Amino acid sequence: MIKFLLPVLVALPLFALQIDAVAPAVTLEGDTGGKVDGTPWSSSMLQGKVHVMFYVDPDEKDTNNAFSEALSAEKLDRSKYASIAMINMAATWLPNFAIATKLAAKQEKYPHTIYIKDLDKVIVKKWQIADDSSNILVFDKDGKLIYIKEGQVTEDEIPLVIALIKAAM
Image (cartoon, rainbow, N blue to C red; front, side, top):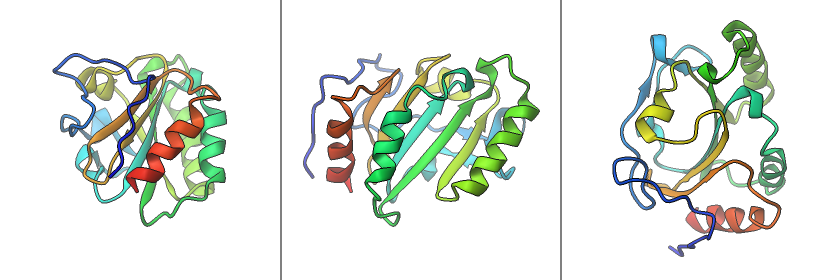
C-alpha cells in the first residue's frame, strides 16, 4: 500500500491516537451514546473498509462541508469505503433531543453514513482529540489511523486526503 506523509498530520502524545496504529478501544452505548438507531457502536467496527470519521461539535457542523462534498463527488466504492458522522453532543448548548431528531432525519436521508452520538465526550477523552471542533479521522482497512485533522481541511489539502483514502482502498 502506498502511504502518504501529509504536512497536516497532527502530532499527538504516545497515549492518544497514533498514525499507523489502531485507536484505543472505545464503545458508545446507553448513557455514553451509540448509533442513532439506539444500538452500540465500537471502535472495533473500524475494520474491513477504509473509514472516514467526521467527529463534530454541532456548533462546527459546517466547517468541513467542502471536504464532505468533494468526498461525496468521488462516488467511492461503498464495499471498500464507509463514512461515519459522530456528534460530540456534550460540546453544545443545543438540547440533545433536538440534535437527535436532526440526526435521525440525516440517517434516513444518507443511509450509507453511520450516525453516532457521543453523549459524554468519550472519544475526546479516550482518543484525546480536539473538543469543540470539527475533526476528520481516516482509518485504513485494518483499523489503523492514517490521517487526522483538527479544524478545516483546506482546499489545498482536500485532494491529498482523497488520494490517501483511495490509496488505502
